[in-house]
Length: 415
Image (tube, rainbow, N blue to C red; front, side, top):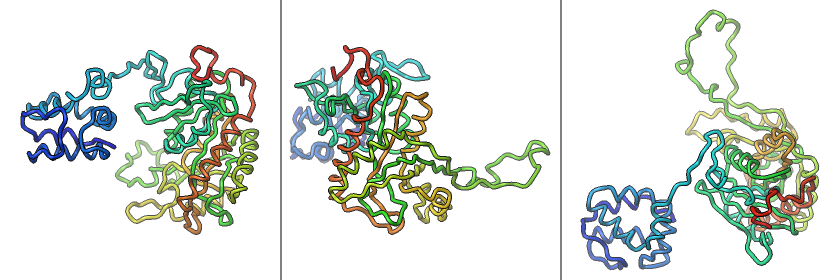
């Protein structure tokens, strides 16, 4: 549970320190406010317990550290709270050390860990399943075998919230990464993984999407076998005359003024044909028996969830009423709409032949009928579709398979 705002609340206490174990029956009004705050952090206990408090105060460590340098009353309350920690726990949980990064062009620390994913060479395999959220990644990690026989699936979470699981599927090294939402997050995952993985890579995305075709029902799985296009909101279309500088010479005024369109739709970027083929085959084997259709077609990736996906509302001037109609007129094969696939495929295209990529998504929403999938069905589909993508990645073969993504055996978490 997030501990945001704890330090300001502590600031109202006087200089009298709290005891090392604060009972919830404390009579002083200010102290009771603190206890209630801590109880919200640790809802499963009526007392402050140091180990759990350490974990739950992780997001508030900066406020607590700042509190130690504020006026006496806040310092005393903060010190009383941190006094319940051992010396080592205090260093780890309240005032953590910051890794020293070098090279502003592509930051890495002294261990070779990349800046956002927080992983180093040997912790990510050359087959990667990218999913949106950590819960889905954790659930699908249960489909992996331990990275090392008799051990556990490798897991690490970075300060930026990326969680990486590495193990084996059918004996083959493979990683699952919780990517988050949007193209910038996909950029971090692909570029930083590429920097620490040796040899060829195969990356497949399993996400969720809106369905564009009227004849496709929610709960279907959409495979982007025909590639993806990108929908981008153009800020210049929303600019007022006051936002633009005056022309500096007569040549700038030549010809009629052409106003930019509010949204631009790119050309198609292709998915890897071989990976897409095996992905579609494995998906049908897993999902059709439970009544979910598998649809192969063109994906559309948008740069936002609301305006660029033609969700309508009155709070903003989005000018997107005709966006879906324009998309389908330009690309009648467009079947799914989400926020990540295009960038994955585009980076694979630009990887100088070193990355094979494809994607699929569970259709949660029918954009024509406005129908939405039942919540209970999502988990079932996530597990089945996840099994299909993992198997597809294993079955997709390339030349330097034997390396698993790291030449140095001593560094591999799967050796």
